[in-house]
Length: 250
Image (tube, rainbow, N blue to C red; front, side):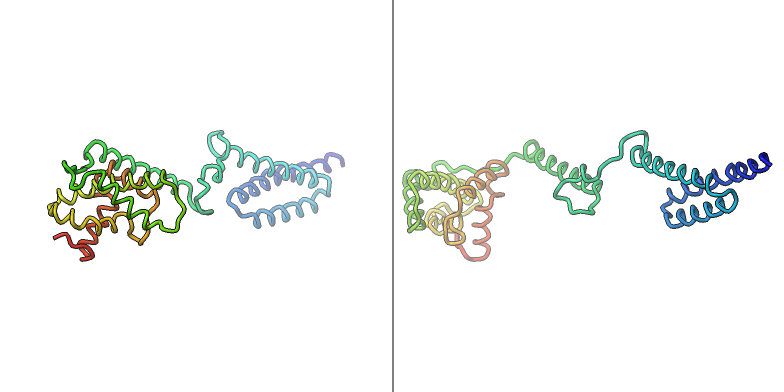
């Protein structure tokens, strides 16, 4: 009787347990959690009917521990024994949620490569063209005085000190000399450029009716130094005014 009971107890366990575990893990890896749950319920119900409750209870514990260890290994060792990557750690904070990190890296690498190419072209293959005019159409002292008078009038009612005004005037003077030389180099009459200098200053320094910020003037000078006078905002603003018949230099 004992041998019959043991054979009745052990043989179904030996046959059904590996099959049940293999099928359960297979459906778990494929993502069919509902089918996995149904399979476990059906298999355990059959074991209860065959051998009672002791062995199925042990199988339940084995299955649960196996699933937990398999899930842990799946998370900790996705490929080659390396820890699982955290997409949030690799993805820049300004990337919208749900965006592809690999796509962002490709885009970022493309932007960096493009910037490097532009910098190398500007510094190696192409030197910035900055025309000079000697002597200038107006001496610096007279030019500085005219620029200061107009800036004071534009700042009427605004509190400022002379140090700030001098800094603005120095930037305006340097910009005006660059634009003046480029216009003459492009074929515009020096006499006409000289006579229309007050109108030109309006487009250079007061495009909205008031003086721009000191940072804007500093940015103009930086772009002239890096890319040439004709690529700067103030020069293009003057040329646009000429093309739109808002300024006449003929």
